[in-house]
Length: 90
Image: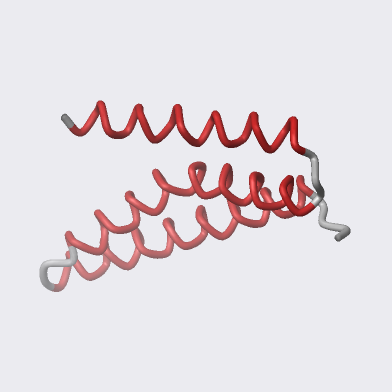
């Protein structure tokens, strides 16, 4: 399979940034009218999760390209990030 790792990851990050910003702007506008705070928080959550999803996309592309060494690095980064999130929630 001929997937470009950089393009795939960059696309995922761009989608996350645009979606997060749109949600935040909509939340701000809605908050001026009536309680759009939840939409603002959803936008912030999307922005926070976007890099995490970028790592997942990188992992999948690397697996499909059979680049086991870098897929392992991406998997370790995923695990370390997940552990950090779990620790920060406690």
